[in-house]
Image (cartoon, rainbow, N blue to C red):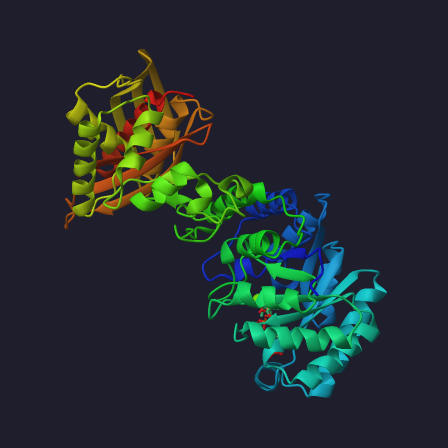
Length: 500
Ligand SMILES: CC(=O)SCCNC(=O)CCNC(=O)[C@H](O)C(C)(C)COP(=O)(O)OP(=O)(O)OC[C@H]1O[C@@H](n2cnc3c(N)ncnc32)[C@H](O)[C@@H]1OP(=O)(O)O
Ligand SMILES: CC(C)C(=O)C(=O)O
Ligand SMILES: [Mg+2]
């Protein structure tokens, strides 16, 4: 029988930061820790203090934030590593050692007996300092089960508070995990956690299998960050535990998408659109049959037991070659437009035509088509008119953009710096429009011809405070101009949507 309440141990700041190429600044780590605490995780593994002076300082900073969750530091079964955790003021030390023969023989070069002794010493040292202690048998899923049980019993006797069973190289399967966790669960009295890697895409499934066999804590990362193919994903694990298994995690799931987006921005690792729960497409519908069903009753083509609202996402109807008339009608009706059946068919034909050419059909495309079919439609007045744009960039100059535009007929000038000319120009435009009113949410550049004079196509998505998103595109040889034009187009279109 699974435990009713499952604890969430987040290791985004430790295993997540081990994602090749990812390195969070100290300020980012503080922001992430605060956000994870707001999300409601039970434990934050804030880092591996012995690994660098910066990591140690960050762990200490996070430990001093006064968060509701427990802040934990990682340590090998080495006194210096544990001392670094103690110096960082963490409440909990997570100590680990390889227990599989392959790792033991090739990395730490110790006998099984020596490993048990090192583990006991580490646990006793941590407990001697009055700290909570998690012990991990690294590579547990490739460890001889009798030996795993004997080391688990030894660290329990030494005072460990919780035993973690890591699937370090992601080789387990749900049935194997179920058996392994059952075996350890029956052999010790302290709680069991699991830490699954995603080498075969089974990290979440293996974590759930562990819960079925009695594990009461799951180690996860946001956006599946972590070594190689990453760790079990927090959002997927939590939502499955809550919505499919009917268990409780204490996570405030409405913060999942905003947390995922923060991690996306800070890690530089883009969330794939098809990522469950948090991906841009998780609640988007393009196919006519699906959109029609969802317009009538969202449960027809969505799980129902999980809604976009539950995870802080939005449901969206997306236009393309698979669109049907019900979706087009709904989008236009929501914008206050009432095309006749004949007009609707003509609009749909043109939408499909664009889609057949391999284009993503933006909202601004739809309105341009609608105008062409129905004639001048209401609400087409442009609030924002771009008058002038200039950018300065170079290897010794911080990219700076100056924008002159009119907003509701009044002239404004704004200047902003950015990481590059596009970033600076978009920020300059955004600085002149109330950020609470409209914000850039999606941005993509594609070269649609070759060469240095390639035509760049920019697609943007702008969202308002009510979560309504409008997409627009612009294509030019100049990527800065194309970006600004697409942004202004989207903002103008969004302003024209009646605020119901
Ligand atoms: C599965 C995991 O995610 S485990 C965590 C992995 N994370 C990291 O490695 C990130 C941070 N790591 C680091 O900054 C460095 O590796 C350090 C500071 C920990 C160690 O650095 P170095 O002293 O330069 O050693 P290096 O990383 O090359 O080798 C690892 C050493 O740790 C030993 N070791 C590995 N795991 C353990 C353990 N659990 N307990 C004791 N010793 C261990 C290895 O045997 C090796 O020791 P040796 O130098 O005596 O041969
Ligand atoms: C430190 C341990 C738990 C780890 O990250 C792993 O085994 O993957
Ligand atoms: Mg790991």
